[in-house]
Amino acid sequence: MPPTNSKNDDALLERAAELIRGTTNAIAVTGAGISVESGIPDFRSAHGLWARYPPDQFATMDAFLRDPDKVWEMWYELAENLQGVKPNPGHYALAELEKMGHIKAIVTQNIDALHQHAGSKTVIEYHGNTDQIACTACFRHRKMDLSHRALGAPRCECGGVMKPDVVLFGEVIPEYALRTSDMLARGCDALIVVGTSAQVYPAAGLPFLAKESGAAVIECNTEPTNFTNVITDVFLQGPAGETLPKLVERVKSVTD
Ligand code: APR
Image (cartoon, rainbow, N blue to C red):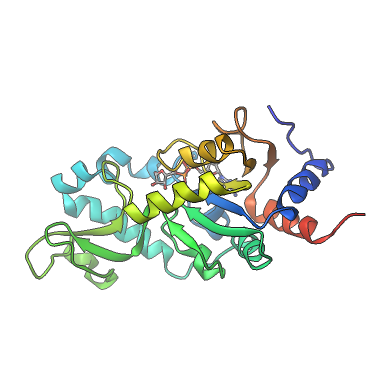
């Protein structure tokens, strides 16, 4: 297991900075953990979303088709909670690494659009986003309208029931996101994986794919994951909102 960085041990930070300083071909893969410091609960931590809304009842396609009104209760709440949330220093740090030319793209599992709001230009939304809703019959899209919350599951002009334009369990990843992320993981020199429990595939396969293709893996998480003992080269333990800005500062400070 890679050594974790204790308070004053910034050798790992320097190692991670060296890996990033030396490339214009890094990517980041992010999960819910990077948005926790923006006030959005993650899914699987003790007080995560799935503790209140069991995913088998609220986040699978079967559950949706069985009882769309019930499933919409959670999605309306989630979309409402996302109103007004702001990126945190972790999002801004990744946007800065893109601006400095080190990160080429972010593949995010998150649906909160906070990377884009922080200024990241190339963001692949692997699990969609809550901006749009899509008809399950004719696939027509329209903007999410929270004022319809009292009416339950929104209906399309064609009569079909509409769902949030996010990937529910049992649905496939949008073709563009799948292919592009795969290509980026295979081609990058370094991959920074931030705030994901590494439990949901195919997203969790991307860091493995990068590693197999010769990339270095830097992991930022508050606790070890399935990646840490197996493919992580540098494990930066701590909240992303603190760790990633330190990494950016270190990348900027060229030590002699
Ligand atoms: N900084 C860094 N990491 C954090 C922080 C933080 N401030 N807070 C929590 N974490 C870590 C947790 O330790 C955990 O490893 O973030 C991870 C969050 O894991 P999950 O809640 O499982 O979220 P995620 O990995 O994004 O889930 C993947 O599963 O439910 C589906 O579609 C949903 O996209 C989601 C996918």
